[in-house]
Structures are given as C-alpha cells and as structure tokens.
Length: 61
Image 1 (cartoon, one colour):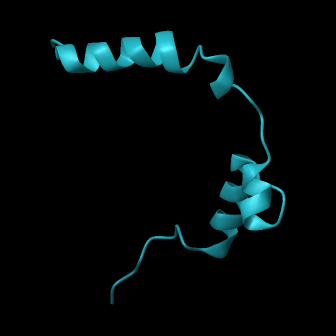
Image 2 (image 1 turned 90 degrees about the vertical axis):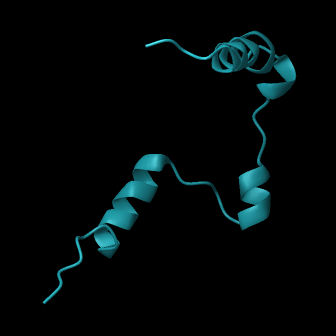
C-alpha cells in the first residue's frame, strides 16, 4: 500500500514543526477555565460513562 504524498507531507510537517514547537508544549488550564472545574482523565471519563449505561447495546424487541 502506498501512502499518498499529501499524507506523508502532513505527518512530516506535524512531527517537524508542530509537535516540536515549544509554544505548543505549554501546559495551560484552559479546560478548567472553560468548564469551571478540573479536567478529568480519560480513565475517569470512561469509568463514569461506562457506569451510565450509554455504551450498552440497544435491545430491540
């Protein structure tokens, strides 16, 4: 399988310019400011969501 040139370019750009840019590595509290509470970890989100039942399969009668 050949990867299209545009995809190769994008990945190269992301790793050489975006992810290595020190200005993109700052830890900020934007989530806390927007939500008015501390951010949750993905584990906390997944556990809360799993117990809500939203991921349970829908049973059609």
